[in-house]
Each structure stands twice: as C-alpha cells, then as structure tokens.
Image (tube, rainbow, N blue to C red; front, top):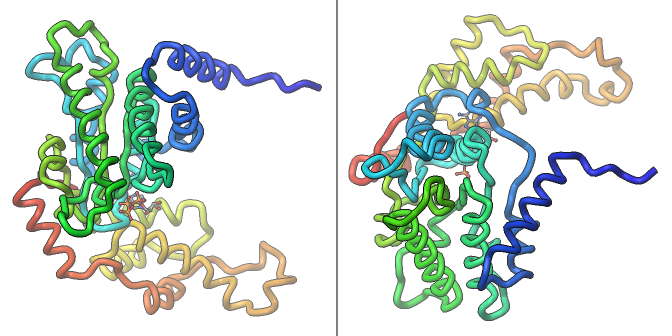
Amino acid sequence: MPDTPDPEHQIWNNRVNEALKHITGVDEAAARQILNEIVVKGDEVHWEDIAGLEQAKTSLKETVVYPFLRPDLFKGLREPARGMLLFGPPGTGKTMLARAVATESQSTFFSISASSLTSKYLGESEKLVRALFALARALAPSIIFVDEIDSLLSARNDTGEHEASRRIKTEFLVKWSDLAHAAAGRDHKDGDDAQRVLVLAATNLPWAIDEAARRRFVRRQYIPLPESETRLKHLKTLLKYQTHGLNEKDIEKLVNMTDGFSGSDITALAKDAAMGPLRSLGEALLFTPREQIRPVQFIDFEASLKTIRPSVSKEGLEAFEEWALKYGSSGA
Ligand code: ATP
C-alpha cells in the first residue's frame, strides 16, 4: 500500500518549496543541507517541562514569544530584540529553554553549532551561513539557535585564529546585521519576515565572546544553578513515572543534599539511583519478574551521591556571577 504523506509533513514541504522559490542568491545545495541537518522538527519541549527558571521564561516570553505571535503590537520602541544570549554553568537548561521558545512561539527552529557550519571546502561555510539566514527569513517566524556560541564568535585572536573560522564569523555577523537593518527599515510591512527572526544563543563561556558580537545580544540572560525550589520540582518530576518509596521528608533531604547541582547533575543522579534496585539484584536481574523489582529508595540516592557530584565548582560559579553583574540580567 503506498504511504500517504501526513498533512503536517505536506504543509511543511509546501512551505519549503515556496520558500526556496523566493529566495535568491543562495546556493541550493547549501539550502537543502540546512533544511536537512539544521532545522529541527518534532521532539517538542514545553514551558512546563522545564523546572523553575521563571524569570528566564518571562524574559523569553517578552522578548520572543509575544512579539512573534503578535508582531502588530511590537513596533517602534517595542521592536523586538534581534539577539538574546543565555549564559551560565553547563547543564542548567539553556538548550531546553531555546527549544521551548521555538515550540511556544510556533517558530521554525534552526539549531546550529560552529561545527555544523564548518566545511572543509573553501567558501562552503559562508554559503551555509547565507542559506541559513535566507531560509530563516523565508520560513519566519524563526529562531536561529546557536549552542556554544563562544566557539563560533570567539574574541578575535591575532595569532591563532584560523582563516576559515574568521570568515564564518564575519559572514555570520554581516548577515545578522542585515537582518537588524531590514527589520529596522521604515518601509517594512506588517509582519515582515526579518522582523520575526531571532538569534538565540547559549554559552558556558560568555567572556570568550567577541565584543562586537556581545553588543548585538541586547538581552543577556543568566541561567544560574537551580535554587532549592527548582531542585524540588525537578526531583518530583523525575520521580513521577518511577515506583519509589521516598516520602516528602526524604525528598526535602535530597533537595538539601543536591545544593550546587545543575539540572543535568540532578537528572544524572536520579538515573543512577533508579539503577539501584537493579544493581542490588546482581545476576538475578536476568530472571526476576518485573513486578518483583523493589521500588527506588532513599538509600539508592545516598549511594549514588557518592559518585555523582556537582559538575560546577564554586570558583566557576563566581566567574559567572561576576560576568552577570557586569553584562547580564540575571534570574532563576
Ligand atoms: P550545556 O551548556 O552543557 O549545553 P544546557 O544548559 O544547554 O547545557 P540542557 O542541555 O538544556 O542544558 O540540559 C541538559 C539536561 O539537564 C536536560 O536534558 C534535562 O534532562 C536536564 N535539565 C537541566 N535543567 C533542567 C530544568 N530546569 N528542568 C528540567 N530538566 C533540566
């Protein structure tokens, strides 16, 4: 029986074909590569999947989601920012936030890293950057999400900078500025596509970003380590789908014991603890029926805490806080 394409897929294909017809001066192979490798579809993240980070969520709603959904209200002084940076220690939910923004603002999500734009063929990388921005405009509203932006837009370095990476960086900054100029142009129509493209970037090394690039991120949002309330929510979410014997008091204790842990440290801890009941079976694991496996207990967490330690040091954290004070707006 022939496959019937699902309607959503069909709508997407039509949009892409229409977009490809209208963009000019872009290499078709590069555009196809961007569409295949860089546009993320499916696998949605929603606000409620992310524990805590309320201030960051509010800021992202104001900066991106509302302007994308109601472009008619966000003009003139309310014109949306063209760039937003999420910075902070690793594993605190920056990538999750970016994906949630794309889902909630119904945007096309372009997810790139320096390596996805780097080509060993001379001139190919610039073509990819041009195709990226042209497609983002043609498929607006769009979010261009750059993970580890520091490696794409690192501070200029006279000695060691590789010619190819310098060229990608220059092309990226030029195309990004074009976007801002087009969006600021007096003659733009309502809902003009350049109005609804945002470069959203994440980094664990905000100080390594080129100054010119830093200026373009009008909003710089610090994503700190989770506070106790956030850790509590996160732990409860993780335990929701697991049979366990932890009571409220045990969970409270865990919240205190995980001070200094990032979101991904907490996920790693819960995953390790969930292995406890299986570990205690040893070889019997192979023939024990599922319903006879004991629930996860507090002792499993205690055992896992011996090996799963916070990945961010105190000194590391201070560096972020200092940078946030100087250049960022902070908020959990
Ligand atoms: P990196 O800087 O290392 O790329 P990141 O800040 O982008 O990290 P994510 O990739 O968003 O972090 O998060 C890593 C994992 O940690 C997620 O897949 C999720 O399991 C967990 N996590 C982190 N923060 C949260 C949170 N606030 N709520 C729920 N899960 C979280």
